[in-house]
Length: 394
Image (cartoon, rainbow, N blue to C red; front, side, top):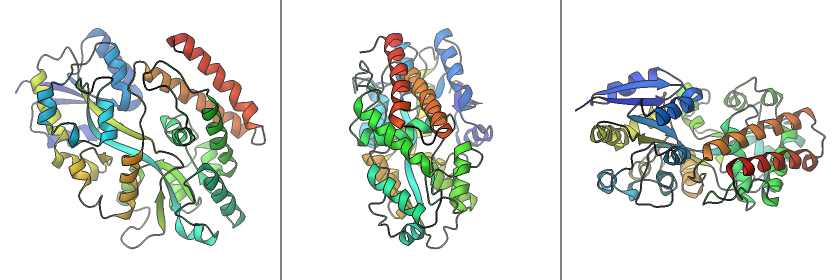
């Protein structure tokens, strides 16, 4: 087999060493932190020089397809991977743009967002955990009741600049019938009445935020484990991390519960893509085959360096995903959740919306009694107008 250069986006260099030991192919793995991933990948696309194979975040393939930088996977190659039916439908949708037969990336592993909570604290407040978080109104009532029953600041969500901000608020937007952009990528919808209302309701929950969550000084998982908050919204990766780190005792029945957010949960995936300039695409595909193998999927999902959820339906149809009550909720989130559209320039739009949310968060935290509609709406409309002009969107 000819040598293949693989660019792995990961914040821990040891991930590359572990993965290299797992693969039998002639692969050189370069590990680049996520914060540096975009410029590295963009340079490769522009100058047609760099890795043969790379990890792309979720819908980023759309941007690179727009630059004619990716090699499409042949139908015969997709068939060797088990076909579209081998993958969760929501993550397979990120593999192509308009034409399902023109596949640009292969899902590798995935994740979703959920609300982690303490059952006994909800029970103490007289709340039914089955409906406590299922709508924005129920969620806010839950936070209010928790506050009334001794939890002065019961809530935690991301408040520092991060894509997690958009991933969380997406559930409110989708749940109220809104969207960020049309599915064809031609019409920006972030300043629609539905989205503005969703943002108002989401940021209204900030009055219940724990002080450490306001300034980002402490890991939200730690706040949850210490029971300093009654509920927190975060990634599905939290469950595996808490199990491995022992911050919560899972060896016996636990009071920790997991609920889906008040709207379709965001589903994200990391995908594998081969650059157009790759000299040995068949060998690069063999590496993709190895990485998507069911055994590797299972091992990665259980390893402390990765810990995300598998993308193969066969793996998700086995324990612990079918038997563990926590995983069963997360898998339901994958099956009923949504992802962003795979459209050109989504990477820029996602970045601008994340920057906007960070500014709104700062403004809301600085003026907790401010009228949210008056604060949020002008900021959203200004950014939306600039994006329309820059990207020539409707």
